[in-house]
Image (tube, rainbow, N blue to C red; front, side):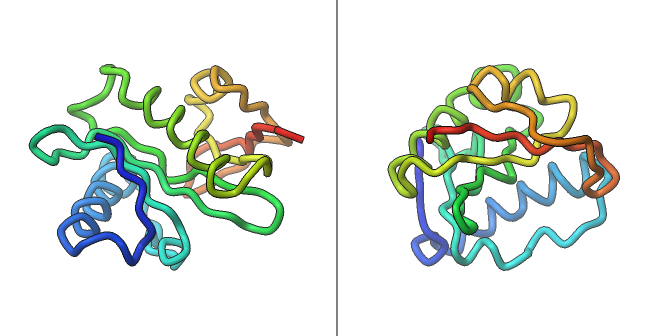
Length: 145
């Protein structure tokens, strides 16, 4: 089941599990020391898919900044990868961004190894490689205007 909730709509257990999973993937698995809790969560929509046991299968954070909407913190837990959940998540994330923010361009900060994945949804690289938390990234844009 796909869920899309504002910060204040998340119950304590949902919030805990989402944040725990972000730490598991981005801090532990990718060996990055960074401040994940950046206060954007307060204004963001939290999109996540669960199975019948409420196990989180995928997650992304959606928010607006100026004239762009953003999809970030995109993840699938290691034990759920290669099952299509990332594809389902990205389709839902794009759909939700358009429903919430209209036809604003959507940007992502894509890890370099995922460029082909995001390109499959129409995202195009914009600018040069940069390093975020010691990992190579590119800004990508899905343009609607």
